[in-house]
Image 1: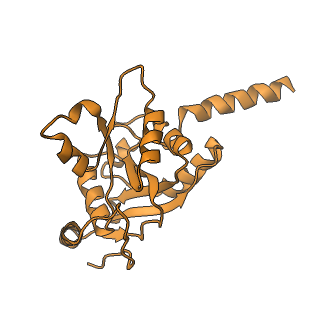
Image 2: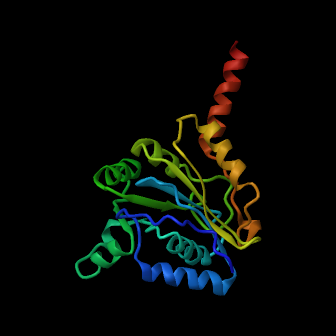
Image 3: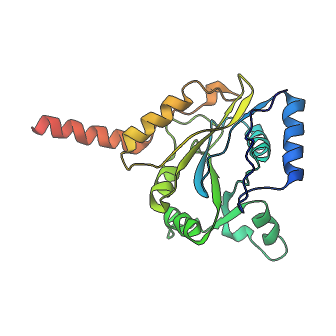
Amino acid sequence: MVIMSTSRIRKTGGSIGPLPHFIGRGFARLLGWKVQGPFPDVDKAIFIASPHTSNWDGFYMLMCAWVLRVRLSWITKDSMFKPGIGWFIRWMGGVPVDRSKNNDTVKQIAEQFAAADQLYLAIAPDGTRSLRDRWRSGFYYMAVEAQVPLVLGFLDYKRKIGGCGPCFMPTGDVSADMDRIRDFYADIGGKFPELTSPARLSVEDELEAARAVGREAS
């Protein structure tokens, strides 16, 4: 199976070694998947992992990342970073966040980005494998606050292709940016398409309602 990957090997701290790359390529060939790249030449990014409809998504996304020689990180509770196991969670890409009510997760993630030389944080905006009527908006505001680009990662089970698509800086115009995201994911099929949550944020409804009120007032 031909692997659609990058011929350029990243030399940053966000890259992985030859063994995981070899393992990733082996699984991709064995399972008949193609991996689309290259990964954008950026040192920090929010990596959108979508659609998320199955427990298998994590495995396939990790496989694609290893083929592209990219070390993805993920958010986990700070309470998991206990003596004896904390180092392993960090090695696996865990980023500690205090999720108690009195703490701002968006601000914490922005601080993590500011402190890191390289960080590719994978987030599934669907939030769950179950069908939801909206995406969670945290990924977007994290990218805006941290001033890092969004990389549109994907798993298309219909065509057995995964990897990364466009990369762009969020403009702050939520509707315009989400239109761009929706256009990309429109034809991407998750493992269970019927569980794919629509790529829309609740704030878009609020903005549309505010515009409608403005038009009526004028």
